[in-house]
Amino acid sequence: MILLTGGAGYIGLHTAAVLLEAGHEVVLFDNFSNSKPPGVERLQAIAGRPVVCVQGDVRSAQDMDAVFGRYPVDAVIHFAGLKAVAESEQQPLRYYDNNIGGTLVLLQAMTRAGVKRIVFSSSATVYGEPDSSPVAETAALRPANVYGRSKRMAEDILRDLHVAAPDWSIALLRYFNPVGAHPGGLIGEDPNGIPNNLMPFVTQVAVGRRPELQVFGGDYATADGTGVRDYIHVMDLAEGHQAALEWALGDPREVLTANLGSGRGHSVLDLVRAFEQASGRTIPCRIVARRPGDVAACWCDPALARQRLGWTARRTLQDMCRDAWNWQRNNPDGFG
Ligand code: NAD
Ligand code: UD1
Image (tube, rainbow, N blue to C red):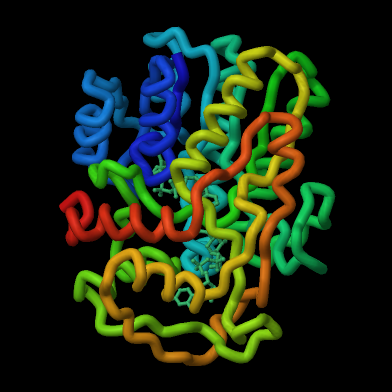
């Protein structure tokens, strides 16, 4: 059985759908601080069978011990954490408490339970402003905000753990920009409040929840002047987790650090155009000042994940836009 902490969140639900489809048994664990129970009901509809979801907090040793005591967990995928960059700068202690405190309590509970396989949600944000793109895993780690530092620290903790306990199998997955939704339109990204990220903002403009997209900066040194990122379909990302999980279940007893991205860069205007094509809707755009902390361009070298995990992102920007739109159109208010 696979334990997914933060399993009711955006990436957790999509990964659970892929794992269930592949025949794995999963148990979701979530405190619903940034997700809603109807997401789990939708997952059950996709899977066509009941899915166990335990409400609890990864910072509670009691909650964690209860899960490991009750379910025969073979491996953990650790999604639970907070992820909003600006909020992390305003509330550093809350972010370190959740992202570092939660990881420590989880690892201690795994140690007590004798579970030694973990796949960890890291982020491209650990690279900060890269010297150049594509970014390989060997690039310098210079996270530029509290959220990014919390991810680097959690990676450090897992690397240190492996030095002391070399029989653990640990995958550190650095995601680039996950977007899109399950093709069935039952699950997708449902951010609270005003979206920070580009794709959910675009889809909310398309359904009329927001009047226009503000494009943050039109004077970057990129082909069209707008920021370039490595967008990855959330279903590709979910399949990347499946590959990493299967790697860990083989007990390789090492730490594997892998970028999960498409290896392609797309500008803000590329994404807007692809979305307009996929949806048939016009997205009013206005170019405004750059967003502080943004880099001009960042995309990854995905070769290591291909070589070590046999995984590669297959879906196109058009697929990402079509599925994001299908989700938003069918669920204008998300999970409600
Ligand atoms: P999400 O907020 O949708 O999912 C995270 C889930 O964790 C939520 O359901 C939340 O309720 C839960 N959670 C938070 N703190 C918890 C706690 N203390 N105990 C139990 N549950 C808790 O976010 P997501 O986009 O699915 O991201 C999943 C992971 O991937 C996060 O660790 C995030 O930092 C990382 N990541 C996300 C992105 C992205 O763009 N979405 C990019 C890189 C890395
Ligand atoms: C952000 C986070 C990063 C996180 C990633 C994926 C910051 C500084 N970084 O990265 O830590 O891992 O999300 O979740 O927040 N844009 C607009 N208008 C908008 C929103 C975005 O023009 O309303 C532009 C941005 O300037 C950027 C691109 O769209 O060029 C993508 O932005 P976003 O989706 O927020 O992702 P990142 O900034 O790459």
